[in-house]
Image 1 (cartoon, rainbow, N blue to C red):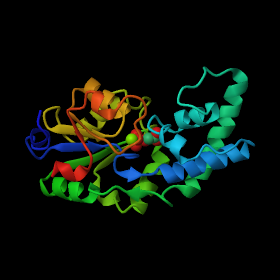
Image 2 (cartoon, helix red, strand yellow):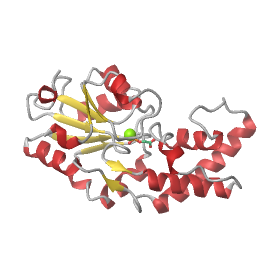
Image 3 (cartoon, helix red, strand yellow):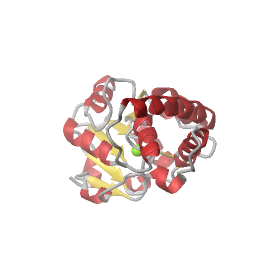
Image 4 (cartoon, rainbow, N blue to C red):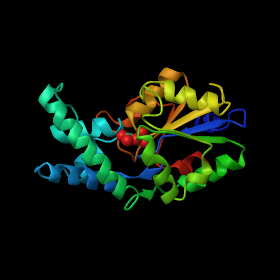
Length: 229
Ligand SMILES: O=C(O)COP(=O)(O)O
Ligand SMILES: [Mg+2]
């Protein structure tokens, strides 16, 4: 499907957006919180370049990756599980105070949201970020007024790449598979959209790790959301 076709469904349509790595470059604050957590545990910092590759599957996975020092972590033993719980609590506390401080909205985002809103489109956020951090970040970035619905990583019992959060948002906003588009930066977003049967636009500038985002089956891949205008 062409880009123009994807973004000219029978309006008013529904556009669902991933948050971290798609609308907002939140890695500086996530990395600062991860490094505070690691310092608390007497470990050396991970740094933003590594943390950027660990974002996209929610806070628990981010913390497990930080403890393992890599994307893949070993299945936890009971001892590790106690450490994980402590680490997660420290991370939540740290991120609660750092969330939004050094995050920025990507270029092209405001123009894209303005355009879609002017078309009568309903806009939703479907993120794996825990719900408690979503509204404060949107507010601080001045993005909160755009969205009719936000679904966080712990809003439902499952998160992306499960299709349920996308389908929940689509149905709540009155969309159908023919009038809904998902926009994201990672394999979790694309796989959720594929499983939901919703067309998907991927951005190249986000936090996807592993195979290049162009190879993951998105209907279109862009360098800026301004390309969608
Ligand atoms: O919290 C995360 O891991 C990423 O959230 P996202 O789904 O908005 O990319
Ligand atoms: Mg993302």
